[in-house]
Length: 351
Ligand SMILES: [Zn+2]
Image (cartoon, rainbow, N blue to C red; front, side):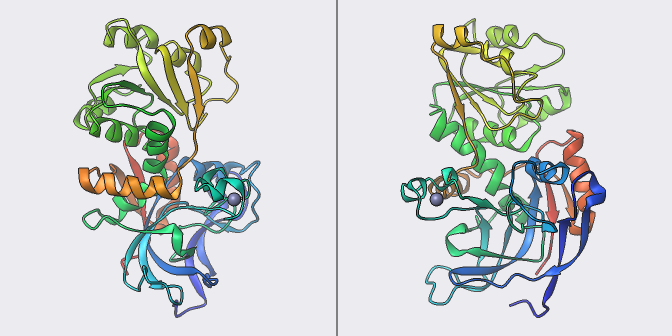
């Protein structure tokens, strides 16, 4: 158990820029029955952390609130009688806590729970020395992954996993277009789709990022800005179009993205950073029988599958940069800049 009643954490004191993000002492969590206490070693910064800092609109939360969704750490105290967790275990955090009773939780898909709470969104998060979490949210960390790599699995890779394999049902013989390849989810999608043998086409405004993406397994690259996207995708697919588009950019790219799909193709989205009200292009949807699919994070079963898949196939999240907890402002700025290739990580403790 923490020897002090307080701990060091990065927390929101308001909404706005980095000036509302403070690093200092917060009360250390006390695990409720069924919860374990984890000493956090590393976490990564996700776009939702920027959203919570900027406004948090539509997400019920109170301030001050500790930031951060994903984490890897060491079990400090396991729930009484728990046969799976013991002090000293290295675990990764699944950041969603469902009600356990609604129709969605009962069918094992608690990311649809209407009462779901996420660390760092509705309650204190992972940018802290300690986190208390229900035992079922803590999964064994892949042993040969660094703390930063393991932490990154809990949001970016899990989101990409559900998008590709549960929602879009990507098959090894299909092609997938991944837009904006520097981001955490896009890069995870590239790694996962490549690992099953699907043909991957990635886009970026940056030639450097595209060169890095080739190292990560991309079969074809398109430099956006320089190219007409649908035309470039048609050229890369012999005029056919791709089976699946993985999208989180939104407004700016949506209508072009729809034009990249083969008839019957699927576009799956988990974000809308450039706007959430693009034209629906309904005629294209029904004539070409396209499917538009939304996705957010992933459930426990998907997380367990992802962890086994990444361990077996040695798929390690790409870490762009690592900052200390006290450098959280630099970490947030790095993510906000869009310059990163891979995950921006926070080192929280060595303990
Ligand atoms: Zn529920």
